[in-house]
Amino acid sequence: MKKAFSIISIFCILSNAKSQNVCNVSQLPANLQNGLVAFYPFCGNASDVTSNAYNGTASNATLTTDRFGNANSAYSFNATNSESAGSNAFFNPSWTGYTISAWFCSNNSNKQEQEILNTIPHNSLGLGYNYTGSWTGYCLYSLNSDPNNGSWDIVLGETGSFNNYSVNTWYNIVLVKNGTTWKQYINGTLDNTFTNATTIANITTGLRIGSGASSAECFSGKLDDYMIYNRVLSEPEISTLYHNTTVSVPEYNNLVNFSLYPNPSNGNFIVEYNNADFKKL
Image 1 (cartoon, rainbow, N blue to C red):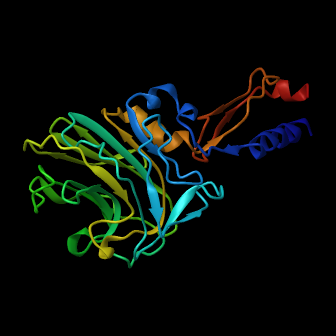
Image 2: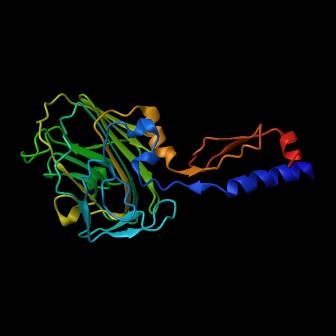
Image 3: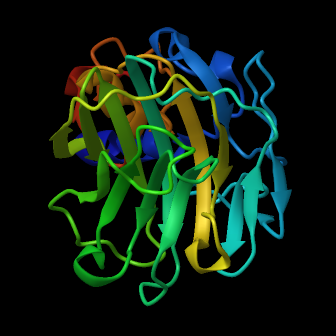
């Protein structure tokens, strides 16, 4: 009976797990606030919640539930003419290092050319999902040395190996530039490494979320939590981006030898406890 009570106690604790809907920079771990140039959590609007206030404007995109079920905490894009864009030119593809993180949830695997992020002007950096031909089913990125050029002269459609995406499922995609090397991560795991030494023009661009240069490149589904850094995030930091804003459990200080980790977690917990402590409850 006492052992059963211990198990029940654990489930009572887990029932108090809370989803982490991060809407402010101060809610992020201190290290993930460093170098954060823009953060679009889509908590009720398309504003940048950093002090830079590089605010966007949602056009034909509607607020919806995020990956935790929180209302008005992500945007739904209609695959035809919706986007979120701002007039501020603040992103510089020539930065020695940068990191771009976003969450996406496509609702239509048959819709191709789903743009996750694109610079303004268009031909500088593009990040998308499920393009045509050999790109079908993959996340990919394209890079150009000068947005005033009409071609993608660094790379057109660089993909990783992962292509087992499911509809109505959230994924975290991160693109990191470190000098002349780019790395793409999916759900905190390295998916692609690409190197090119072409000089990139020192030109700042704006950013467009959910669409590209034409209506054909509109996203179908939900997008959320865009973060733009002017530095290279480490692999542990990228893992934290994926795992941090997931599920957390409140502290139970009366359980001296009880531990639950990782906390926050993405749903998989490890529980350690001393049965004697539960006998005292």
